[in-house]
Length: 277
Image (cartoon, rainbow, N blue to C red):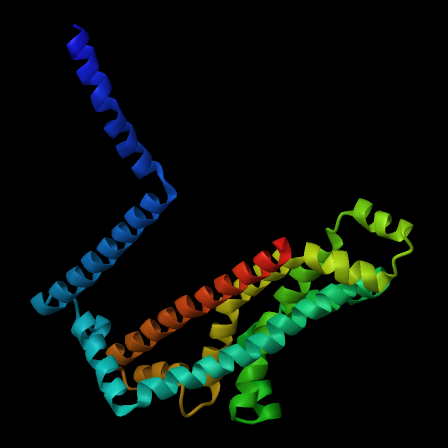
């Protein structure tokens, strides 16, 4: 009986270690990544097989192989790198102007409750305007070059960043503000030493939200008027009924979105590590 108990007890730790592995955060990430890749492979494989078998229309849906051929062809010609670079420039510069500039303006509104209340309805009205509505006007005002696309991207981002950063500034602990005031701290000291660090999580949240808006703004601007860029590539494919070109552009947009999200996540880690330090 004792030998049986010893055998059971000796086999328990490996089971516990096995369960602990699958409950760990790293194992969960690996499992999720594997399942995500498996879903993508199954969907793309089924899509390709369906097109080759004739059950899926090649004209309406193209195929993963056809999309890959477009990407390889444009890569070899240099058009792919040029389109990505142009759209990335428009997105990043417009993001810096709109999202970062909007965050700064939102934080500065903390200085005056009167001005923030006065500007609130105008900010809400501007935020209700769709990007597609102002894009033609922007092209007329700033021309057909990169500046117009940058302004469209900035317009897409500014309201979200402004409102989130201002909300973060107003959520600063009033007891801490009163504590600094009791030490005769000026409003500028309170702003830079307390309000800005307290609002950083809100600022970063606004930046994360605006990544998608910035890329969409760049694509919309290229739809209206452009001779290069990923949006121009999608427009060219749709005008020629080339679904493979359209889908290749969509793939590029998704890849760029993942890269931009990764950059914002890196920025978030840097800001939070600086805040903890």
